[in-house]
Amino acid sequence: MRYYPVNLDIRNQKCLVVGGGSVGTRKAMTLLDCGAKVTVVSTDVTEQLLELAYNGSIVLKKRPYQTSDLDGKFLVIGATDNEESNRQIHVEAERLGILCNIADRPEACNFILPSIVNRGDLVIAISTSGKSPAFAKKLRKDLEKEFGNEYAEFLKLMGAIRKILLAKNHEPEAHKHLFEQLISRGLIELIRDRKNKDINHLLLEILGEGYIFDELMETGS
Image (cartoon, rainbow, N blue to C red):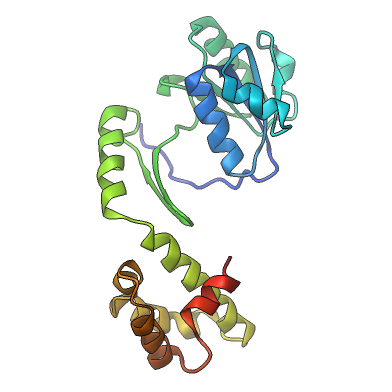
């Protein structure tokens, strides 16, 4: 199987998770973090899901899965330990043209979920195409050590700079070389080492007046 890599914008999309155990909880939390409107269907649920439902963060239906639960949904994740239920979800989602993932069953999915390293706006996805989730987990842990929080701050800064440049009617290609210089001159390392004075000097040298690290980080919040 060769998968087509893609990043989905699921903000405000209606998504369904069937299963309320630890796996279902993790799936629901990831969907919430990405801005989805999440419904969880399960007879048994974790305390965390109960709290999310109480706070209005998710819609919780404490009952068995029904076909009608798929109505209007953008995607569904099956996270139950019931093979018959998982098969039903897969068949009905496929018939309705809904994106479907069945946890630990790549053959019953039309998309699979990679291991993810998150550093702010930096998202690194690792996939073994379902062949070895354990190896994907190891790679994720290795990458988490290599990519620290300085990458989140770096992207926040670059986003703030890009916004200013675009407001000056610069075409994106016109300032591409400026970003390349910032990267090649070690901006990430300066952020990691908290060398704000050196950062400001570099910004002045490459971008000119008006680019102050602390101020840019505030506007990028």
